[in-house]
Every structure is written in structure tokens, then in C-alpha cells.
Amino acid sequence: MPRSLSRETAAIVKSVAPAFRVFGKEILVSAYERMLADPGACALFGEQALRDRCATAESLAEILFLVAINIDTIDEVDALYDHLARRHIAEGITTAHYRYIGDALLSAIRDVLGEGASDRILDGWHDGFWYLTDMLMERTNALRQQAQPGSRAA
Image 1 (cartoon, one colour):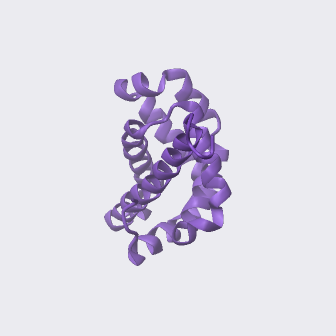
Image 2: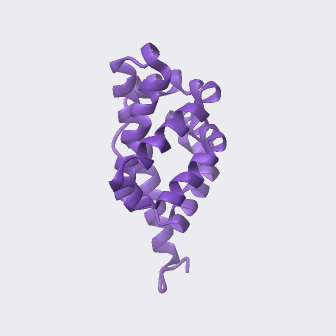
């Protein structure tokens, strides 16, 4: 079950979400460059996969904006969450990957937004990221189970 979302965390995430419309590509390129510089992330994701994601930073920024702005009404982007879950299944993304993504994303937010990324903002984004990630992992696991032979949906 996903962790709970406080009103304060939702408000923080939503207040910063528009930054992904302006600085999203820069934030995500910075995050992927951080992961490319990390041997553990390169080993887990694959260097080429990280480079490929870096090349799609602009579209990923729009996805982050949509998910963040709807953090407290995530059912509004249910189809997007299903798409992300299916994509993560296809790409072999597991729980181990999210730590690298979260660390790189938060560091990139701080670097790109500078003083606009206070400790309070980053703490809120940390909690919001893990809330959204827990929900995405839950959705991914449900889709994997449905695809297993013998399941009702298979």
C-alpha cells in the first residue's frame, strides 16, 4: 500500500510542478547526467538506456508536470499512470531503479532551481516522489500479476 500523502506535501509538489514546464528538460538532463556519472546507476540501467532517456527529457518533463500537478487527484491521470507502469515493465524497471532516479532528480531540482529549491521544497518533493513511486510500483506489480499465466486477467 502506498505511503500517505500529507496536504503540505501535495501543496509543495503542486507549487513546484509548473517549474517542469519551464525548466523540466534542464532538470531531467541534469538528473540523467548524474546517473551517467554514477557507476552503480550505469550498471543497473545501462549506459545507453540512460542516454536514450536523456534524449527524451522534454517529454518526460511534461509527464512529471502532469503527475505532480495531479498528485492529490492521481486518478485524473490514471491512463498516464497505466502507460508509465506498462513502460516500466517493458524496460525492466524495478524497485532498485527508483533510488537512483529519486536521488538524481532531487539533486537536479536543487541545482537547476537554485535558491528556489529550499530544503522545505526538496523535503516535500522527496516525500511526493516516494508517494508517487509507491503508487507506480503498486500499479506495475498489479499489471505484472495480471499478465501471469493462471491469473484472471491473463
